Length: 322
Image (cartoon, rainbow, N blue to C red; front, side):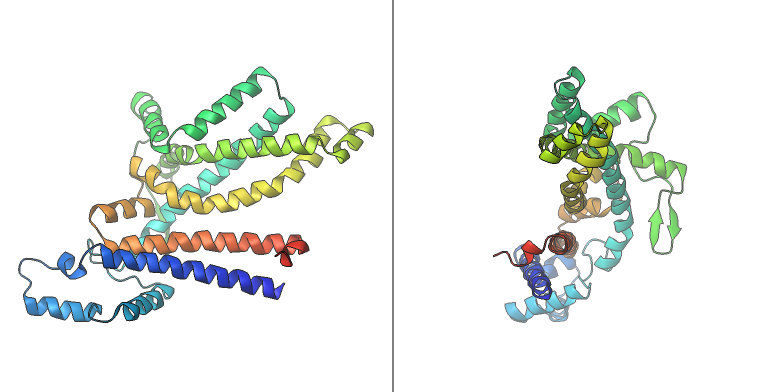
């Protein structure tokens, strides 16, 4: 088991080095940082001093090694646009994105699981087929279209929820939360629904497929032969055996939601990391872009590694698999 864990950690480290290399290439290919940080009043001597301060006169490998070392310590430099520490900027936006992702994940489980079970045990019914058709639409619709439709219906037409912003927040140390205010909770509704729609349909279809497979298994047939009630078979036997892939998918999709929340955050003007990244792309703020890429990749790699190690703990065959 120890060898397996070491291998997984080594793989994770290699992936992060590759991502750091790509992020570093953004610095190299996007233009000269000195030109972006200079003004018309900057003299040539000042430009050369700034270049020396940033270490741009060093070789490629030395600069890459310095970038990896700084990134490992959470140091990504200064934002070209705001003139502030990049990690501090991301830390300010991180709570907003995480709260949006948490609510979207909970919605996907609370809605997707029951709908998946319903469409499996009521297969062939008209409403089951209608839900299946609706799931195809949910998978196909882009999130920005869903967001715009939600704003049009519930904000512009009905006036039930705010169309943009995060509402009032409460600072709890370094974490700012909208869970403790009415306007913050109302502001969460539409963006979380927009972000969770794809995950709801994905979990629903996964649970349905797994339920149909489990219902054909021998132990379910034996349970029926023993006279156990249908609902005990559905929820105590079949559903419990379907939860492992659902838990895995949910854990993996947390990273996906964080990465792709930028579209939802842009539509709803949600002040999270995704919105910060879009602004960085607009203003070619390379340190912020590189930091965002490294942080999102780390979240993906961390979740992948945890899931792999958990599987190995559950199933010993995976530890010796070639």
